[in-house]
Amino acid sequence: MLIIIDNLIALVKVFLIVGVVLIPICFLWNKFFKDKFFLEKKKHVLRVWLVATIMVFLYDTKMPGYQELALACEESAVYELGDPITVNGYYVDGLYSGRAWRDVIVEKGGDYVEINIDDVKDYREYPEAGIWRIEKQPISSQRCTPFLQKILDRKHPNHPFTKNYCLSAEKVDSPKSEYGYYFDIKRKVLNTKYDSVISSLESRVVNLKNDFILSKSVTYKLLPYKNHGLHYGFSLHCSSTTHNEKKKGYYRSIGEVLSATLIIKENENAKL
Image (cartoon, rainbow, N blue to C red):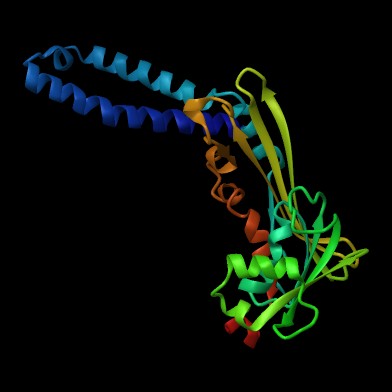
């Protein structure tokens, strides 16, 4: 039902937008060419208006994968936030997990972060795949890890953290953290002609002691013409398919699931 309503709303929007463009063109035509055709034949203006509206609407809403995106968002999109929890660090598993120490420790002042490195090809600085525990150490510590220190010196040479602290890295068998953040992406090709791809993006915060999910977000992203030069980088999200204000926040809320649930405890080190 929501898909039908969405299409009707989209049709009305396109109708109004086309009208805003078409009507001034008609008046300018009459003014400069002294041709009263459009004003005298109002039915022609209306006909052009309707045809243009339908063409733009079909292009906008019938692109490869649009209906699949709208259906997935309507039936499966989720956004559930639990109560915020103050922590000194947490476990991260998923996209960009290898760089999580920058956000958790360097920027927010956390004491540690645990990360899962599935493939060292994605993070060549790590000697091997597995779970790594990254901890903040005093700059004079003997536990400073060289490969992380090189990144700190190269990426954050003037950051207050680099002047006072270093990072240690230790490979562990399993996370010691009480809480973990997971981010998963699954892709499906919908149209081989245009290489249309729809992706499900799921993020969740979990209590690792009992596997209870505290917060969760599931949303979808569509690349209708992935390999088409004129549409390179163009994408649609759940916020593009629904009139429901709550659901419009699904795509933007992916990061909020983490930032709104696990709050890094403020300390003096974070203010340096």
